[in-house]
Amino acid sequence: MFRIRRICKPKTRPDTWKIAGILKKVCAEYEQKGRSPATISITGFGTPGSEIIVCAEWDQESIETNPRKDVPDIITNKYSKELASLVQSNEIEFYEIATAEKLNQWGVI
Image 1 (cartoon, rainbow, N blue to C red):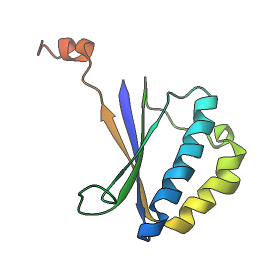
Image 2 (image 1 turned 30 degrees about the vertical axis):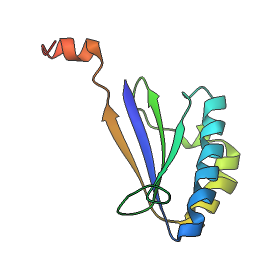
Image 3 (image 1 turned 120 degrees about the horizontal axis):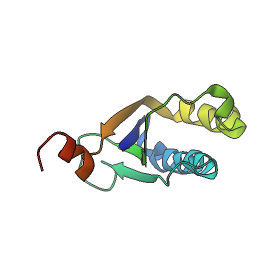
Image 4 (image 1 turned 30 degrees about the horizontal axis):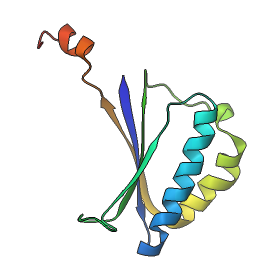
């Protein structure tokens, strides 16, 4: 099991909630195709933080490439362009979830 986190840093403070809204729409498109529900979160805007960050994160069983043909058209033709105009940087982080099964495989429980 893996947690995937997409991290967006806004170009300007007022763009923060716009980015969160777009990420919510992007995630909803993928959820319709079977991806697990995503959580959208913001740090550094109304909460303490060294910088403003907007994150979308979700869990999935495995990490695989997302073939271009499987990306919904509205993401490619609309949402990606909107995000590009609002975001100064965009990265994806991958975390392996320490499930009981994996901890047992490593002999730590």
